[in-house]
Structures are given as C-alpha cells and as structure tokens.
Image 1: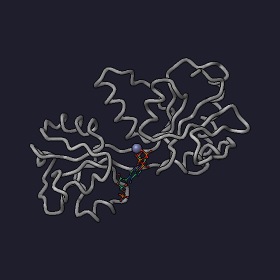
Image 2: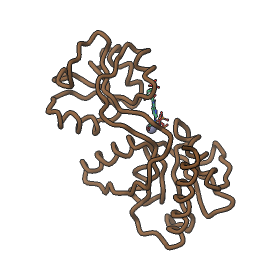
Image 3: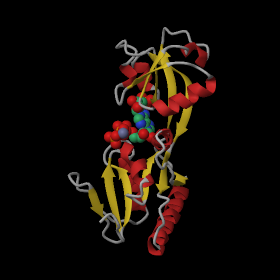
Image 4: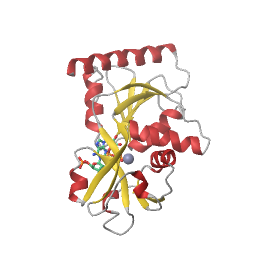
Length: 225
Ligand code: PRT
Ligand code: ZN
C-alpha cells in the first residue's frame, strides 16, 4: 500500500517555505493545483504526488522512506537527525542540494539588559528553544551547563514571561528579537531550504525522474542567480 510508482515529494503545507517550494516545482515544469483541504496534490503531467505536511514531519517521512523527496529547512533536518541519533532511529537521507530560499540562522539571544561576554555568560541559566538538540551540541562543545525550556512557539516571549533567561531561536531580519527587547549574541547554525532524498532503493524509472527534477532545479536556480 505504501509502495507507489509515482514519485512522492513532501513540501510544507503552509508556512514560510510552502509558496517557494511550490513555485520551484512549478518552475521545473511540474503541473499541479493545490486544494487547500487536501493532503495530496497530484501532478497532471508527470508521475509525481506532492504531500503537503507540517515541516517538522518532512525529515522523518524521508528518512523512513514514506516519501522519496522532501523540501525542508536545514535547521529542521539537522534537529531531526540529532534527535534520531539520540534514540537510535535510522536518521539517514541524502541532501541533494541547498536551495535559494529559506535563509535564516539559529541564534542565542538575551534581554537587552543582560551583560553578555561570551557563551560562558549562560552557564547555569535557562534557555528557551524549539531546537534542543542543536542547542545541546553547541553548549556541549563549549562545555557550558544550562537548563532547557522547550517551547514549540512564542520562544521570543519566554524571557519577558519569566520562563527563561535567554533564547535560542531562528532569526532572519532580527525584527522579532528587537520587538521583544532581546539581542543576538551568537549564531549557532546557519540554514537554507534544501531538497533531500530517501536512501531507500529507487526503481530506475523513479530515479530517472529524480535526476530530471534535480537537473531542472539546478537550471532554475542558476537562472535566478
Ligand atoms: O506549521 P509548520 O510546522 O509547517 O511551520 P513552522 O511554523 O514550524 O515553520 P515556519 O513556516 O515558521 O518556518 C519554516 C522554515 O522557514 C524554518 O524551519 C526555517 O528553515 C525557515 N525560516 C526562515 C524561518 C525564518 N526564516 C524565520 N524568520 N523560520 C522561522 N522564522 C521565525 C522565527 O522563529 C522568529 O519567530 O521568524 C521570526 C524571526 O524573524 P525575524 O525576521 O523577525 O528575525
Ligand atoms: Zn514546524
């Protein structure tokens, strides 16, 4: 039932990557119409199905071979890989290439009144984040003990709400940090959107289609540079 002759590509349903993911595939000549209520969009002109899901689900779907390709932020991919390594779950997939959108950085930030010298200033403090594994790796490398405050959203309000001393969150323009009286102190991970492939064996026809899509993506991105 989970085998399909059609290539399955997971993209974010709605959010910062969804429009550009769809646009990229359309620029590659994949013709489809998205029905907002539907999980799957079938391409009209190629044996391709688009699965529209939460971005956090995409790496796992690819690593488990449920879908063939996924378009995802490198930050979410990295976090899922670290999480799976921790619980001994298969975490392998192949990053085919970085894409030209979704640029952001995962940074530490603290309240404006906090006097920060270096990461050691966070010793023993509580840090709110949605990326506990990437944060842990950074803090372990620096040898800093800290406490977690795991939040899936509204991370930037945690210090003001008295939930944490600092945060580790995604930043693009910096406007959200500024609006919440925080400043960025360290970039711990830089991210772009990327396209990943499952490491499950592919049929020759599906692999040929993947190669065709990838070569078109290369062409589209080169033309946009
Ligand atoms: O619903 P779903 O789970 O699919 O989406 P989501 O809410 O988890 O993710 P979404 O749509 O917010 O982001 C998807 C991906 O876009 C992220 O995983 C990143 O790879 C990428 N991306 C790029 C960003 C940003 N820029 C970004 N600025 N993701 C989030 N932000 C948020 C950040 O968390 C903070 O709240 O934007 C705010 C900061 O932005 P600035 O411009 O004020 O600095
Ligand atoms: Zn998400």
